[in-house]
Length: 460
Image (tube, rainbow, N blue to C red):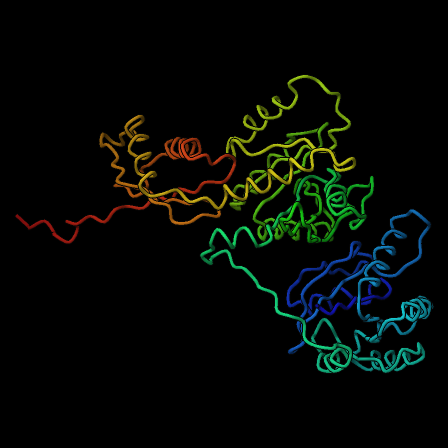
C-alpha cells in the first residue's frame, strides 16, 4: 500500500513549490500571493529510490465558520486524516510566527509522525530562522530550498526513516502505445471537466464522489488548480480533473488567473474525454463555442453537459432542442453527446457517465481498411472532387493511421489543391458511415509519388 505524506503549514511558506519538486513537474500553481492553493492536490512523488503519495494542502489559516477560508482548512484537515505522516513547512527567512507555533500544536495533535521542514534556508537569514524552529518541539529541522533543490538529500534521510517500505510501482500508459481492447477496458479513463466560471464543475464532481472533496462557492473563480480525483462508477475507473473556469482572454488580467487557465489547458491536453459544462440558463455563449473549438483542435473526445437543469422550466421537446442547438453551433463535433444534468441534485449523472464511456469508445475506434476503401469509392463517385485550373483532382485511396482520435491519410495527385469544403464533405460522410458522432476526425493529405518523376525530358 502506498505511503502518503501531507505537506502542511501556514500560507506562502513554499508548500506547493516543494510539492512540485517532489512530483517532478509543475502541477501545483505557485505565486507570491498567499492562499493560492485552495483544494488539496495529490501526486506521485519520488525522492531518490523513495516513492510515495504526497498531498499539497491549503495554508492553515483561521476563518469564520462556513467561510471559504474555513472550508479550505477543512480540506487540509481531511488531508491530514488521510496521511501516514506530515511535512510541516515553515519559512526560514521569515522566522517563526505565532501562526507557526499554533499550527505546530495542531500537527502534534494529529498523532502522526512529523518532519519539520525549514524552507527558504539558503543564506544567513535562512539559517538563523531554521535554528529558531527548534522552539516548536518537533525535532531537528530539515533545511531545504524547494525552489533551488537544495537540502533534498537531508529530506531523503528524514523521510526514509518514516517509510516502512517503498511504494509499489504504478503502471503508466502512453498514448503512443499500441493498446489492446482488454487494456482499454481496464485502464482509467482520463476526463477533464471544463467550462466558463461558475458553471458547476466542482459541484458535479463532489456529487460523483459522494463527498465535499472540492471547494464550491457562489463566487466565480473558486477553483484555481486543476485537481485530479479517482472515481469508480459501476465498476469502471475514471481519473477526473476539475479545472478553473475559462474566461475570454481579453478579460484575464491577473497573473494568478493566467496560471489557472494554463493549468486547465494542460488538463485538456492530458485528458482523453473532455466534458464541456454549460449553464442551462446561458448555454452556447461565445466562450462556450471557443472552448468546444479548443477541445476539437486538441483532438479530444467531447461530451456536452448542460448543468443546473433543475432550474429550467420543463417544456416538451426541450431535450431535442438541445440536440439541434448543439449541431447548429458546433458543426465541427456534430453528433457529440449532450446530457442535461444537475450537479447539485445528481440528476442525469448516470447518463453523463454512460456518454463519457461511449465517447471514449468512439475516440478509440478503428475502421477496417476494406470497408474504408469501399466507402471512399462510393463517396468520391457520389461527389467527385472539383476540377482546379481545368484539371480534375485524382484521389487514389485512404487509410487509417491511428485512433485517439480517428486519423486518416488520403493519397492524391495534388494535395495543395484539395479544397477545405471537400475535406469537410469527406469528414461528415466518414462520421455518418462509420458511426463516429462528435469525435474529432483528422484527414491528412499526401501526394502519391510520381513513378516518372526521375525521367527528365530530353532537350530537343
